[in-house]
Image (tube, rainbow, N blue to C red; front, side):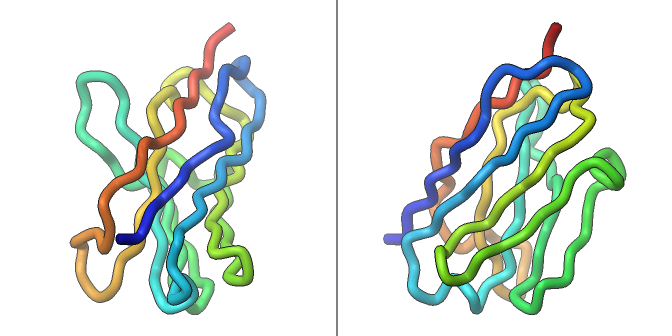
Length: 118
């Protein structure tokens, strides 16, 4: 069973930055698209950013221009660089792998909490 371990969250002031990491325990990491999702209290999980196995990226409108997704296949890790953070970015952030559908490949990890507050 593949394990996903997200890290890098924390408390940051509005306008600040954080870099999230998600390590996946699979040797086939490079073959899969990876996505970052987030879930705020009382809301549904929403897609934030994705990166394909080939390195193409796409972002939710709320993340465009502020967040950057990247991956290091040698480390089986996907990153989310978040700049110019806003209070509405407060959520638990999760990653998962995807193949050729919208169904996540693995069990969700514990996520990492991001709190943007002054």
